[in-house]
Each structure stands twice: as structure tokens, then as C-alpha cells.
Length: 456
Image (cartoon, rainbow, N blue to C red; front, side, top):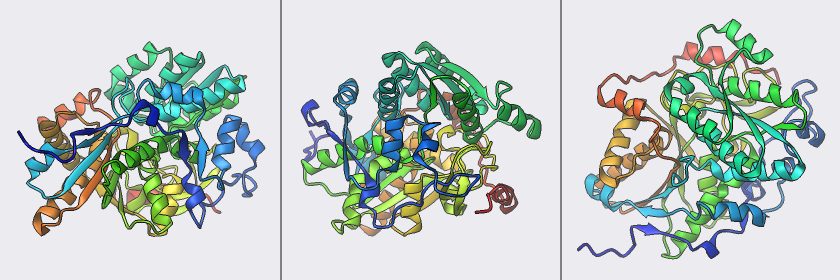
């Protein structure tokens, strides 16, 4: 019997479930730049944002002063159906790697949606219901967000239309069925149901779509439908805020055993999972209380942070959203049909972008085959099948653990396991039978996307 100082799984009790979200922007001395109206190039007003988003979500979006924001009891009650989630000590992975490093991960895949997305879906639908709305629209890439939102809409009794990136809808038909089980309507994007969808199809026949395309269609439908609003699953400040339940729980669980991570790692698509995981640790870093190394991991096929530009850009392909200052590949960038659908987004959270730009965190891009190599290693040692998106974090966690093996350093590594891979067996099959390839955009490919950047 192996003696362990730390249990395999560290749980909080239901009573210890955090009562507040962590507002990282209030800790930042230099705030992210404001959204701009794309026509006037002036800061977007509250009234303009409320035409698209729920009122209380706009309040949260613009809040840069309150370090902590209370979680309504109704949302905490919803959370209790699947939270708190465990922090797991990866003893088996450590042994498989032969590393002196201590590896922990926060596992968010224990609800039916299979990912962290339900944390924000529950909150956003609650506020929509409170406002008296009757329907919502959204986009989804790999399908986790669409699934989570359909679950929340079923609970609160709202109608939902989900524009799902076409290539993901083709690769993951069971995600579509799951969303429909909870009452959501799924439309592969780009589609012929919207003006912007028809325009994109005309300009790019045969395209597999992108999150930017799907966002455009969802926003158009929301603004043309009575008593309806658009909700987003990543990127925006209020989404990152809701996801800080991840980091708040993680920090509280580790504090029980006086554990301080040396490295915190998460995958990065739009940035909500990453921001949610690092928020309380980064807040302490900004106040000089730690010197943690933060690493964002993105696909080499969509290298927003590592090869993108820090500039104002649209959040969608159809150029309907406010302009956001962020790291971006250009709203016109069309990523390859990789299996990590949740990371195929041209832009990055303004919070993450600003922290990265100011040197508080680093970013790495990794090839798809190396990601799945890490995923298989993790599955065979830890017994959990990880989502392709989350496996980007696993790849770098393994890399850092192997560095410790070389140097003999006993670093403590923490990463976010944001979802499970049970709807991704087509991807795993492609890796295992050797048909999976890697795509890295050329400089010419990137320049095509940068050409779509607005003149600001």
C-alpha cells in the first residue's frame, strides 16, 4: 500500500462552495481597453451592449471595481447539482513519467455537458429568465457550450437556437443529438437561415465554418427576434467571471493542504476556461503574493496568442460585434478542421490578451498529434478520457514534468482538465490508426486573416 500525504482527490464540502466569483479585472492595475462601437470607433455604451446581451450580464461585463461579486443563491443551488468538482493528484501519471514533479488537475467533466461550460450557462440563463426573456441564441464549436446551454435552458424554461460550427456538427453528430435531447435547436453554420450565413457561403463555398461564423449568425438572429438575446460561451469578461468558480474551488482545496502551485496551465481557445482557472492565483500574483508561472496552450493550427496581433478586431466573421482589443488572427481567418473544435477561434479574451501582452503569462502552441499522444498517455495512466481541448494543457503539463525529471526539481504543476472526450472518438480513432495529421498555417495564411483587421 502506497503511503500518500495527499489524497487522490481533494473535495470541498457543499457548504464550502464559493459564494462569490473572482473579478480579475478589479485586480489589474492596467485594465483591458474598452469595447468600441465599430461605426463611431467610440467606447460602446451600456445601451448598445444591452441590445445584444442581458442587462445584468452587461453590468458584470463593465465592472472593473468590485474584486468579488456575489453568486445569487439560485445559481449556487444549480451549481450544487454538479459542484464542487475534485482536485486530483495525478499519482499514476507521475509514476508513468518517472518525474519528481507533483501534478494536480481540476476536473470539470463530471456533468452531462462534459465540460466547464455549465458554470457560465447556468448563470447566463438565470439572468435571462430574471429579465423576462423567452429565448436565446448562441454558437458552439465542439458542442460543449451548446450542450451546457441547452441543459440550463431546459431547467429555466427558455427556447434556444444553437449555431454549431459545421465541421464540428459533422464530426460530432452525437453532440447535436444531446443538445436536441435538452430541447435546443441545432443549425450547422454557416447556414442559409441568415443573411450573414448566406454571404459567408457565397464567399467561401464548401467551408467547414468557424466560431466567428457561428457567432455572426447567432447575433443576427438574436437582434431580429422579439424578447431574445445572444449569449456567448467564452471570450467576454462576464463569462470569465462565472468560470472563476473553477479557480476559487481549486485554491480553497489546495489551501487545505498548504499546496502552492509553481506552474498553472490551461488550454486557450476563447479564454474562459483559462481565465477561470488562473483568476484567484493571478489576482495574488498581481498583488505580489506569489510568482507562479502561468501557461496558456493553444493549437498550432490556430495560434492566436503565439502568432496573432494585439489589435482591435471584431469578435465574429460577419463583423457585427463591438470591436475588442485582443490577440487575434483576424476575424476573416478560417482555421483548419482540427479535432479541437472548442479552440478554433480567431481571437482571445481581452483579459487574457492584456495579461499576456503585459508579461504576466506565457503561451505555447502545440501540434494536434502531440496533443493526442499526451491524451493517450493520460488516459492510460489516470483512467479518464480527456477532451482534445483539455489535452493541450496535458501536453504542456507532461512537458514540464519531464523537464523536472531532467533537472531533479520537485515543482508543483496544476492544470485544468476542462472536459471529457467521450464525444471525440472519431478523433481518437484518427490518431490511433495513424490518419491524423498536423496543420500549421503559413505566414501567407495568417496575412489573409490580418488583412481583415479593421482600421482603428
